[in-house]
Structure formats: structure tokens, C-alpha cells
Length: 401
Image (cartoon, rainbow, N blue to C red; front, side, top):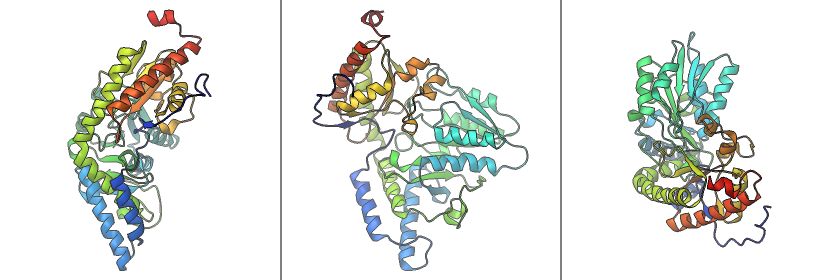
């Protein structure tokens, strides 16, 4: 336990880690529990219970498709964002014919994409990793310059999970179409927070995850444009039109459908609320705490995400200190928790290792208020001051420079 924190008393906890996972909303929970109780059938069975499950599954597919402005038949239910990304990246490349064995991605992708690409490299596929600009934004021209005659897939996330920077997917989509190359986008952090029309974006494959939009964990979806070849990851029955074998998680899909419906209906309102809370945190931290830097602040960002580096502070120590004060935040991607290495995203943006390791992500969402934001800033200031007093590299003289 950190020195000086053992006697802290926390009256109320506040959650500022919505990019890692979101709480299940009450409305979604009601629908989910009802589905568990009232929809016991296998959606592939021909009896009445099975057909009832099929009907509700297809209604959920319609709701998810509406969030993505996609034809319902192009939506494939999966177990979550990682499976969706893997199915898109591995499936598209493995389905390619001839010598088209090259992928273009970026250095700031989620591990679900980066590790799928590393698996492809182990299978003999060449992969080009495009680096972002200093603000975390991917230049479409850099994607175009990386294309080769043998390129089969471009994969660029819609919005970054650590910085919230929104990528120019529509512009990249035009480049990919002109080159005759498939485009996949990891939309896990974007869908439900900003418009995610697969038509406007020009994507062939687009991944989402239920637990990022207040649905339960363990369910997601992948948009697959009609005609896009995709080799399956799993082998079994011909579920999901032969694209994803395995009995469908009907209650999970129903919950995801309801979450998608609510997200589409309330997207603008929630974005406005989230941006107010995010801005309060960002403005006060930058104005009241010395030697901090907002990462990606000059680029378009999600309304709910801010990433800040605190000079002379270890990010993990700050996470623990804030947790003891009643606030859940993150030092990066939850999928990399336990890692002691600095964020690959921030390093790719040009930060040095100490600055990258001194960074925290604050992601707002359902239930966060301006009052919570103010209380969080007070806790950040106290925690940073305490940890800097203990730091061998941060002194008051440094702070005044």
C-alpha cells in the first residue's frame, strides 16, 4: 500500500474507466434477464422454442445493423471485439487467393489486431505498420504509400482506445477502394459514441463489442460487407450463414441489440454529457497541476476520452492511489493490464518511455457527473503531489522550470 494512503476513507466510488468496460445499463439488464428466463431455445431448432429464439436473435441483428447503418444480413454475432477483429483480419487474409499476401495496419492498433497481424506474419504474410503523427492521427497518405500490388487488407481502428483519437477511416476507405483492397476497422471504442455508418466509412469489415456500450461481456458483432470473402475461425455447424460456427448466444445478442438501440437513440445526448465531464477533467488538470501533457489534444477525439501524462509520476502508482481514494481509472488498455512496459500507442506517437509510463486514461460514460469530475481532479492533484514528493527524479525546482 502506498505511504500516506492507509487511513483514507472512501464514501462513494466513481467509475472513470468506461473504455475498459462499461456497467450494464438497467434497461439492458432487464432485457437480458428476460431473455435468459423466457428464451431457452436453440435458434437452430425447428420447434416453437427454437423459432422464438430465432425471431428474437434476428430482431437483435436488426437493432445492431441500425447502429451501423448496415443491412441486417451482413451482421455476424461473435463473442466480443477480440473475436470480431480476429475473424476480420485472419479471415480476410486467409480467404485471399494467389500472391496477395500483404496487410497494412498501424502501430497504434488494439492488441486484438496487432497480435492477429503477428500471427499472419508467422504464417508468411508481410505486414506494414504505419506510424501516427505526433497527435496520434493516422495520415491517409501514409496508408496509401504503404499499399503494394499484393496488399489484400488494410486495418485501421476507428478511434483509439487509449487516447480517443478518431482516425480518418472514410478517407482511408476511398484509398482502399481505389486500390481494390479490403478495409477493416476496429470500431469497438467508436460505435455508440460517434456516428459509425459503415456506408459512410466505406469499410468492408467493422468490429464492435457489447461491453463497451453497456451490454454484458461475452458478446459482440462483426459487419461483413456482402461479397467480402472471409475464412472462418471456427469449424462446426453453419451458424451465422457459415461465417461463425457455434450455437448463438441468444440472450447476449438480445442484450447487445437493446444496447445498440439505446446507444443510437441517445448517442448525441450522451456524447454531450460525456464531453462536458471530459472537458472539466482536462481543463482543470491542465490548469491546476504543473508539468502535465494532454496526449492527442490537437486531434479529433472521442467525446469521453482524455489521456494525460504526469511528469515524475508512475502511471500504475497513480492508478492505485486514485483507486484508494475511490476512483477507477486506467494507465492504458485493460487488455494489457499487468504489463510493466510503456504504452505502445504513446511510444508510437513519439513520447519517451518515462512520459508514456506516466500517463493515465480517463474515460467517462453512463452515470458520470461534473461533481464527480471535480472530486476526481482534487484526488488527482493530491495523489500527484504525494507521489512527486516521493519521486527521486521530480523536485520542486524541476516543477518550476
